[in-house]
Amino acid sequence: MDIPLITSNRINTPELAEEILEQGKADMVSMARPFLADAEFVKKAESGESSSINTCIACNQGCLDRVFKKQRATCLVNPRACYETELEYVKTQVPKKIVVIGLGPAGMACASIAAQRGHNVVVYEAEKLGGQLNLAVHIPGKKEFYETLRYFKNSFEKNNVIVNTGSRITAEELQQMNCDVVVIATGVKPRIPEIEGIRHSKVIIYKDVFGARPKIGNKVAIIGAGGIGFDVASLLLHDEYSSERWMHEWGIDAAYAGRGGLLINPEASVQQRKITLLQRKQGKMGKSLGKTTGWIHRLSLRKAGVEMLTGVDYRRIDDAGLHIVKDGEESVLDVDTVVICAGQLPENSLQQAMLDSDKQVYVIGGADEARELDAERAIRQGVELAAKI
Ligand SMILES: Cc1cc2nc3c(=O)[nH]c(=O)nc-3n(C[C@H](O)[C@H](O)[C@H](O)COP(=O)(O)OP(=O)(O)OC[C@H]3O[C@@H](n4cnc5c(N)ncnc54)[C@H](O)[C@@H]3O)c2cc1C
Ligand code: SF4
Image 1: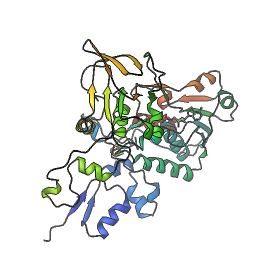
Image 2: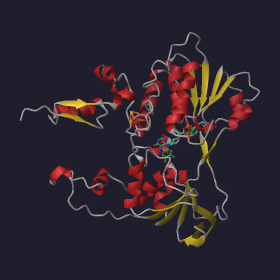
Image 3: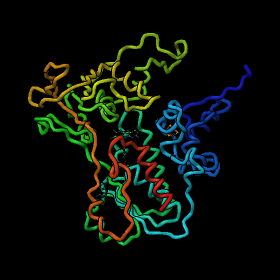
C-alpha cells in the first residue's frame, strides 16, 4: 500500500526520529511536546548540538495537565513555553557576580538562565547536581529526569558556570563570599510527624528508602499519600523494574501477535511486597496527582494490590507494627517497615545568616515555600528570578 505513515509519541530526540526514518518504520515523525521543552529543537538538531536540547520528559505537568483544566499550556522544563513575550531572557548590560547555593531544579534553572544572560555565576552544592531529581530518576517511569540533569550540566559548561559539588556551605562561609547577589536554593527537609515510636527501628524517611531498598521488609506501611508517597509505593513494589514488566502489566504484546498488540490473557504480576498507603485526610487518595497521569498511578497501585486507607489517625509504632484508628476502630498493621512521606519543610537556615547582608539575597524553590512544591514550580521560580536579576 502507498499510504504514508506518520508516527508519533515519545519521539523526543533527533537520534530516535532519525532511527525510525532510516529503518523505514515510518515516512514521517510527528512531535509536539518536544517543541515546548525546547523551541530550538530543530536548529540544535541541524547544527549537531543535540546534547544541548532540553528534552521533554513526558511528565504532562506543564502542558496537558493544564490544557485539560482550561489553563494556558507551558512546560515543566521550559517555563518560557507559551510565555515567550512575558518571560524574556535578555542579555545583561551589567554583569554581576551571582552565587547560587543548592543545585536542585530551582538552583539549576536560576544559574543556567543567569549565566546565559551574561552574569558570572558560581554555584555550590552539598551533594551532587540535581537535588531531589536524583531520587525521582529511580521511580518507575521517571528516569527521563536524567535528561534534565544532562541538559543543565551541558548548559553550565557552555555558559561558564563554575560548579562546586560536594560543598555544603555554612552561614559563615556565605557571609564572607565576594559577590553581588546570593540565591538560596537549598530545598527542603522531610517533615517528621509527631507519632509515638517515630524513632523505632522500623521507621525510615522517604529519602533513605532509595539506598536501603533491598533491606526493606515485605510488609510496608507508607504514611502520607502525596506524590512522593505514591512514588515510593510504586518503587517498593519490586526491587527490579523493567519495561517488559510494565508492558506485561498493561497487557501489551510487544511481539504484536495478538490483535491490536494486546495480550489476550495477561497474567497478574506477582508483587514483591504487601504495601499499605495511608493518609490522614478523608476523600479520594492522590488528589494532588496530575490530571492526565494521576489515574494511571492510582490504577497501577490498585492492580498491584496496594491497600489505600484514608481518614486514618496514627497512634503509635512499636514491635507489633503501626497502630491506627480508622472510622473509630483501633487496629494494628503488622508491618516490618513504616516509610514516612508526610510532607516537607523549607531548608532555609542560610537565609537567617544573610538578614543584615548588603548583598541582594533571594530565596527560591523549596527553601522559599515547601507546600505543594514540585520541580515545575521550582524551575519556574528559578528562571523568573534569573530573568530579572
Ligand atoms: C521521589 C521523588 C519524585 C518526584 N517526582 C516529581 C515529579 O515527577 N515532578 C515534579 O515536578 N516534582 C517531583 N518531585 C519533587 C521535586 O524533585 C522537588 O519539588 C524539587 O526537587 C525541589 O527543588 P528545589 O531546587 O527547591 O530543592 P531540592 O531538589 O531539594 O534541592 C536542594 C539542593 O540544595 C542542596 N543544599 C542544601 N543545603 C545546602 C548547603 N548548605 N550548601 C550547598 N548545597 C545545599 C541540597 O543538597 C539539594 O541538592 C519528586 C521528588 C521526589 C523525592
Ligand atoms: S510539561 Fe513535561 S510533558 Fe509537557 S512538554 Fe514539558 S517536559 Fe514534556
